[in-house]
Image (cartoon, rainbow, N blue to C red; front, side, top):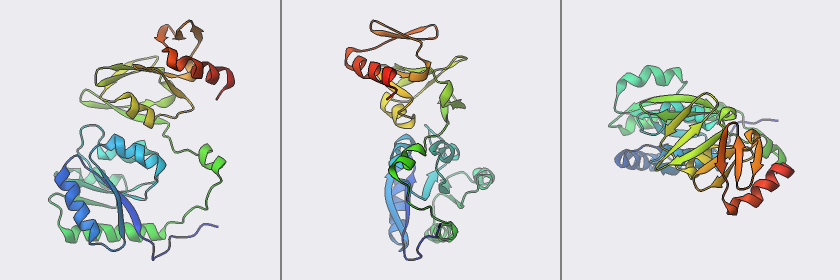
Length: 250
């Protein structure tokens, strides 16, 4: 049976903001609120998303204006039922934040009184939400919270990209090409960052510059795989694992 959180328990949270001073202020304020437990702070939203996959956290203080992933897209990409308190220097984002069912919206520079009010609102909602009973390991794996799509920033736009349509990723300097049957998008990601956001059962790195979607592989020939009309190199270090996964479905 589901139960609500214990009132004596602390509300765990993280903060994501590309401005060090903003994170410092949130850290100082959180330390003054006895029911808050600030777990981590992040300047890079991609790193925060990767951390959340292994450390589900109810509340996030989230900057809206970040270069890699906007705060407005962060919750949807995470695939988790996060409570969000948005922070920004621009008050015009208030309407959008409330449309996303945000707990609150804090305009920088943030005053402690407003921070506390937002934290109290978050605690009230948290205490009213039922918690799920612990899952067996197999159930936890089956319900892994990888999103079915990503928001990719390419140029000045963000594009919604279904994970199932990604054929392969190709490294190009500090960027990655996301190849699909209909288009390709260039975005500032490292291979490691992309792998942390994609479902591991579906994707595998086969070369220092290439990640492939296993279900889309049509042929394996010598040290290459064919995906549609594309030939992707497979480094010797990855070949054995690749063949094992293709043959055994591991």
